Amino acid sequence: MSDTTLTTRLATAQDKPNVTRVFSEAGLDTDATLEGGTTYWIMERNGEAVGAVGLEHGDGVSLLRGAAVAPSARGLGLGRQLVISAVEYARGRGDRAIYMFSKGGKWESFGFTQIPLAVVMGDIPDAPQIQAYRARGERPGGSTWMRDLTQ
Image (cartoon, rainbow, N blue to C red; front, top):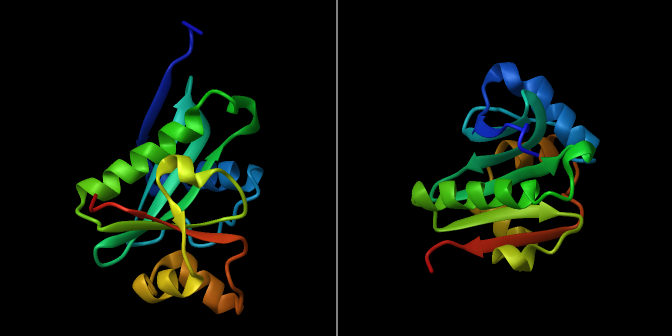
């Protein structure tokens, strides 16, 4: 793959169609992507969006919002790179914890542990993803996870 150029950069408002496409292809919710109080990254291979990840920020905590890789780029460890970058960013901004909702995956390998949904809903109630769930009268599906960033 010497002819492949892979870059990860902060996403801008102009990247929203690509972020939502990557999330949608992975079966992730696309409501409230790139809203205020968030940070998103887009991963490009030869100029084409092949991955995206986001963080929704609260007071000393963040919510990992989507970590997705396009089907054409799966199996190369790109999703792992995106998650690790987001965790390190949250740590760098001084967050004490990072939360996430997931319908699958081996999140223990990233240092996450399962926690009750109420913890996340209480600790970061104004996150755009949580607000979108509340507006629809829904609860996040799957499991709720946390990674302690103070250790």
